[in-house]
Image (cartoon, rainbow, N blue to C red):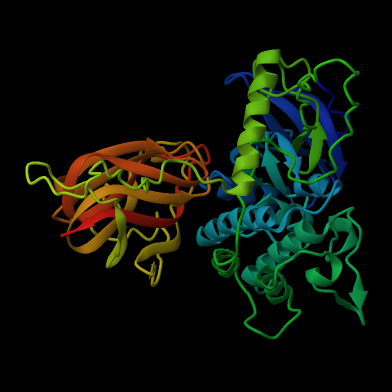
Length: 510
């Protein structure tokens, strides 16, 4: 049976029911389908019998099915042994980078965060021996679940017959072009890869982002220029190099819902005279469903994304609260009591009573001597595959670094680790009052551990808390003392990736 006569309702392998034809291109067809055995929405690609690269696509899909990074589209099945060859992959719901940019360029911090995640994901694919080679703003999706998803690793190159003598450099260039687009809402690549306006050029060369869009810092502008070959200074030639470069620029936490652009807010009518103003009803942002660059209608009720037409008032209220959180993420608001209230002097006569102890002094900033990453499985050693190595993280007695773990499949480290964190060596035994932590995301379960040995089992938990975006405080529940202080992620935030940028310890030196 030819692909061209396959109709909605056709079942493949006695389990995949084709429901809607999304698009036909170059001898293959993408369908929205249902896996009837697992009762979930899937994407199915079928092929014309004359399509010349069926075997190549099936081989690439089978290889891609071994990828474990959750930011890469998962391949579930691929077969060419029957009458109709097919590839089955996960159905991705959300908004592509290209669609975000039809409204406005992204704020630079958010663009950096989005492409940092994308660069890490492509670097993970390269580590497994796979490449993309066809990256465009249509391949990057901000999902309805608030995660980054990259489409088409390995399979797109096979579909389009793309090859490269230097795939790492080509994918780094593609990521740089996507970052350029995110910052400017213009596309510096070939027109067939994106419907965004073409990037302006001078003497045939693409203009740097700062010349196209105001408000772009030199740091991220230089990263784009290095990845696109617009400068001879330190070219970026691998996705891992691009991710490393983006660690050094300011990055803004991403919002909870799809839609990262910054369109002007709608005008609201003024309330009637002599009438108290009413609280406006939150309006849900536009969301669309995508798989391999194409929107589709919502899934069936049992599988549809949570935010859809007909949302209850309770969910609208939750959305309003979430938008408030997003505003806090963008502002990096400080939270928590800083414990710096000066003691009250009740000795008005100025006479010392030997029977009464002096008022306690407020906690002071304690200098940190050294720091390192630890986790449950490799105590006392840095686990490079799980955590970012940081060089020279101690500045002004504080721990300052872009520390992060890899992204896991759930908030419990995918059952690979029981926890991870940063162990601080104070250089001597000190009294600990509290520890202030700066992190970009809310919702992580954190513990404060203190002891006189750097062995994880010897440290006792003296405080617990939940992270909030910005700076928050972990208070010691009791008077505690020790040389080593551990900030421990017992459970990850919703992004399934632990991050922090600064830790300060407060108390009294001995």
